[in-house]
Image 1 (cartoon, helix red, strand yellow):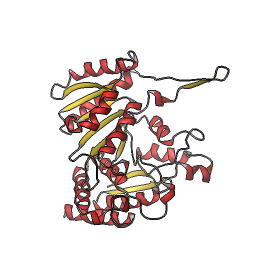
Image 2: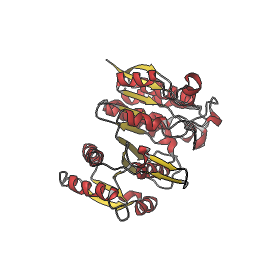
Image 3: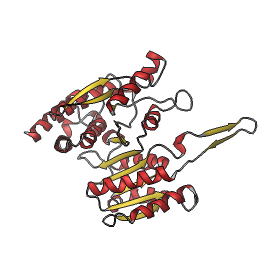
Length: 338
């Protein structure tokens, strides 16, 4: 059986890292029926729409997508396609694992963190108003009980399934007593249903400090949309950056897997981009589908390939091209599964 999936190569280096990732996925023996579609700047230039109806229709059909990086204009232009997709398909859970790979030159060794970020509301819901007369801009931080309950419960369920022993809820309830306060209160309520998972909480600014001093003391983290956006990038920095960490956006019956680093148009087409982030997102997609052996083979293959710095891409001091790196990981996947 082949899994129907939408494939969005994206902008800049997107097509290169996507091709390498597809080759790694193919090496697992898990079959995909890819429906390739456009989104981002390339789609806007070609069709006048950064998120064409055909792309949305494809995901409506497949309920599964793998997406390369997209370019989002800063300050002006079209709204983030990533945000639009997450909200349209109600992919409320953004899952961001951060696990150390060899030779990534991060400030710590042995980091293994997992972040669950509410993905559809908060400040990123985009509820904004501008008072032209007084030159005042307002943004509404909308936190709902329903949204809070489902991300916190998802975090407990997934952390338990993965064997995580501790879940830390991050908030700003000392200042934002209604919005962050409600999120914290709901977390404490739900924690009573999961006595096997230790539960505690941290204020966002303290949590940022804790992570850059003693990340080994933490396990899984759940938080609201903007706090999660910031902490997930910080956590990626602990293990080598956004180029080596994957991302999943998961809803009730739809899931989008993506590289969250930039589209790097300055190096597009040169064959030097590191595809690891999207490869790891592909690994997450396999786990979502229940293909755990294939997913674990990719995880092991990445660790094996990263153990030899000469096989890495130039951003990590090696001389491998994007496609050559993908081929090496794919070969290692086949060997692990043999």
